[in-house]
Length: 87
Image 1 (cartoon, rainbow, N blue to C red):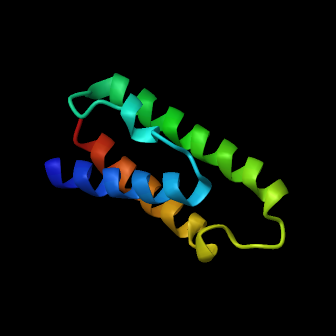
Image 2: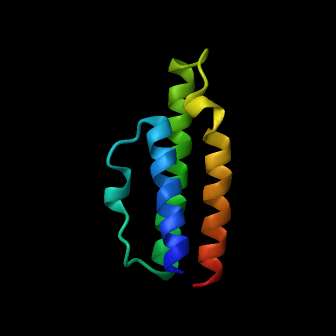
């Protein structure tokens, strides 16, 4: 489970840097578990998507994160599902 949390944190950092979301991980505690963890992960995902859409209007001619944003988001969702299956 610790390994999954580490992978998830790396995905969150990648996604945050892609969209310019500063201090995004400060709100998410490493000791959070169960439904609270699931809620925090859902909130993070919603915030990332908001920032992504917000940036699209400014960067319409550029690819966000070299086009890797969607790949990072899919990776995040897969790890999140694995992690939540262990709860």
